[in-house]
Image: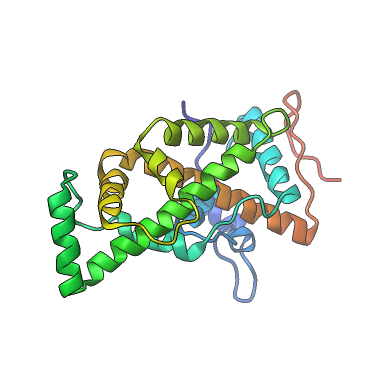
Length: 239
């Protein structure tokens, strides 16, 4: 399913000053872009470039922004962790199998001669385990009856992807600062191979949450009002 959107041409983007303004002024995008991740910033830019036209989706988006305005600290977005994770996931030499012998050999080699590549993997896996546990806790804390539709969908996807896959192993590592070599090797295989598509979906949800929390913080800071959409009338009314 693809949400109903329309594309804005370059001239209209310039006229609306969405991304660039005269020197000294703040563009609309810059005003709302307080995202903490590269993925979140890209999501927000795409949102400005391809606005929704479906009223139900628009109202759902507003409800989601309001939700994060009321609960600003509902989930922590850690810029440093996400930066490490994003860098780690695009590294070459993805593990093709789970081999305890290869994992232990690599661990011994790294003890003898530490490498930056292994440091990135170890650090990023620790960060990703923490991020996924935070996301899982966030999903469990969502009240199904009172939450907006988008939040309920996040809850369903997050719990389904983690509970029904090898990713459930991360739940055993919550609040643990050290991950042993064998388990870390298995997680590397899951994160960058067998469960990589699920990881991308979960990170995509984090990026969207990053966008919603960014917008909600600006709305609260400046006291902006939310638009009201009416399917029976066409036009814009400003009170």
